[in-house]
Length: 327
Image (tube, rainbow, N blue to C red):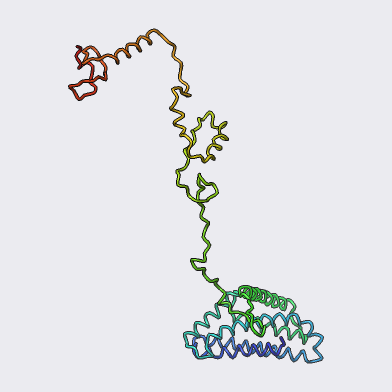
C-alpha cells in the first residue's frame, strides 16, 4: 500500500469518530484526542511520501523502508478493525445507546488485543512515524529510542497477524458451481454448524442375537431352553479338567442327560469316607436296630426312643415308646 493510501485510510477513520462526539458528550474529550492523533498520523504519512519523491532523500529513505512497511501493516489492521465497529452505527443514524455500546466494545477489543488502549496505540504510530521522518532527514535521532519503538510496533503487528490468521482459519471456504464458472465464498454462518441428522438417519448399533443351540449360524433365538450346566469340578481337579470343561460347555446338544442323573443312579460314591474297623459291638447294635424296626407293637414302657408304628385307632404316626404298651 502506498503512503498516500495509508494517509487516506487514517483520515477515513478520523471522520468516523466525528460522529461519536454528539451522542457521547461524556467521552467527547477522548474521541477528540483520537481524531487528532489520526490526523497527525495521516499528516506524517503524507510528509514521508513527499520525502520519498525528493531526490535528495531517496537514498536515506531506503533505510526506513522496512520500518515504514511494518507500521503501515499494523496501521492497516487497526483501521480495518475500527471500521468494522463503525458498521454497527447504521451510517451515523444509531441511537445513543448503540453508540455507547459500540464505543465500549471498541475500547475493550483493542485493550484485550495489545494490553493497552487504542489511544496509546495511535500515540505509538504517531511517534514512530515522526522518528522515521527524522531518520530520512538525518536530524540526529536516538537509535536506542527508535529500536524500542520498532520492537513495540513489531510485537503488536505479530499479534494482529496471528489474530487475522486465526479468523481466516475459522472461516470455511467453499465453492458454489455456477453457470459462469466463478467461485463465490459462502457465508460462514451457514456452515458454522453441521445439520443434525434425523432419527431415521442415525446409525444404530447392530443387534447381537445369541446363537441358537439348534442352528449356530442362524443368528435367531431358539425355541429350546439352553443346555444344562456342566458338572462342577472339584478344587483338586479344576486345573486338569479346564480344557475338558471348556469343550463340554461348547457342546450344544440339548438332549443330553443331566449330570445329576449320572451322580445318583449308582449306589457308589466318589466322596472319600473314613474307614471304620468292624467290631462285634457295632454288628450287635445294627442287628438290634433292625430287629426293633421289624417289630410290631403298640407300645413299650421300657424303651426310651421313638418308633414308627401303625395304629388303626389313632391318627398319630409316631409317639414316644415310653407311652406305648407291650401286648
